[in-house]
Amino acid sequence: MAGQIEEIDPQDVWNKRTELVIIDVRGPDEYEGELGHIPGAKLMVLNTLPDRIDEIPADKTVVFVCRSGGR
Image 1: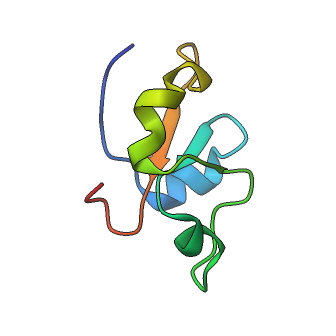
Image 2: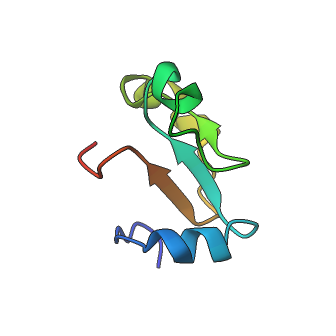
């Protein structure tokens, strides 16, 4: 359903990673840091999302990733 927001289990993201658009909203230091990032995830720092909204596909399932789920 378009516009639906729900949490997804990390294992489900991994299992479906080829079917999803994964956007990491952390800072570049976190994305490249010791925790790393999901292979294929696109970095879009949270405060840049309003300016980059056209880069987020409306016809795909998008998963936003941050460190703790608070962003």
